[in-house]
Amino acid sequence: MMQSPFSAEENKSMTIKKPIAVLGGGSFGTAVANLLASNQHSVRLWMRDAQQAQAINDNRQNPRYLKGVTVLEGVVAVTDLAAALAECDLIFVALPSTALRSVLTPYAEALRDKMLVSTTKGIEAQTFLLMSQILEDIAPLARVGVLSGPNLAREVAAHALTASVVASEDEDLCRTVQAVLHGPTFRVYASRDRFGVELGGALKNVYAIIAGMAAAMGMGENTKSMLITRALAEMTRFAVKLGANPMTFLGLAGVGDLIVTCTSPKSRNYQVGFALGEGLSLDEAVERLGEVAEGVNTLKVLRAKSQELDVYMPLVAGLHAILFEGRTLEQIIGGLMTGEPKTDVDFISIDGF
Image (cartoon, rainbow, N blue to C red; front, top):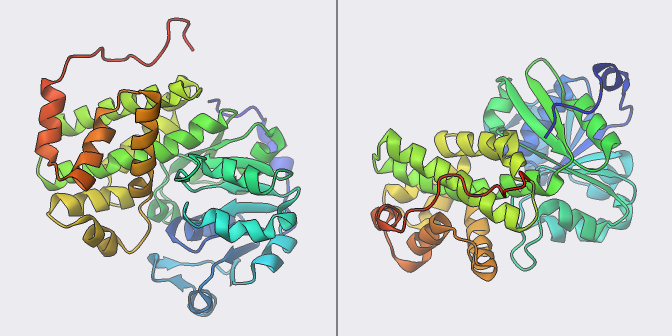
């Protein structure tokens, strides 16, 4: 990852005259829409729910997903997806991983030549494709990138100092995203390792569930630190097996995102884990959250893929055993402590890649 391959003057010179679309009216989609509007861009926030859209336009609030945050006047909530796509060249995709393909496939031709930036951190169950890969599958002539990093929606909306990563092989797309999102409280770095950046964002959600469980059960700070650092080694080991650059995982989209997701009660996956640690069932924990926790979906496909690739992932195997095989967190941590000792940092090859 690099700070930016583009100069400040290049970024300042870029202007977006057309409206910018954000697809998905959840917490992060709303936060991104507000961020764009705060930078004086006109935004089309698409959602399926007509009542939710009307409430945003009338009351400037999204109480279901981002209660208490004022939606800026530059954001117009819409329900006509075809019209939004026709009007905009830059499109941020903040749809749940399970809905992205079904929502966008009917509009494949309308996505031709558009800049599509995925903000969804998930993996498709049937194909093990990341969200940007699904976008390429749907619209092979679109220009695709991802936005990922330690970006809790409520803090972005509250203008807490935040940094993120835009990753794409398309340098002009990276420059454009940096230009429209950069502001006094939000900084965007660039990377060409789209696969690594996106994979890190998907994998960390699984470990946030474990961290939430540990917090609810009163486990110590040493334990939390152990879980986070072993999670980093584990997810990087898996990513390198698939061809990602391990150095990406030492940046914002790797360890940065992992830390915030595994330590903040504002993290949706952490909240699900905390509820599980309090004794709720998985269904009850997800129902309490009221939103999609991508880590639950990712866990199942990650467990199967790690077995297929023969990658050592004891935390993934352990969480799967807790959620679907009746094991307890104490048993899983006990297994970590009694298993064969491994090396500490074992995911970077001898050639330094």
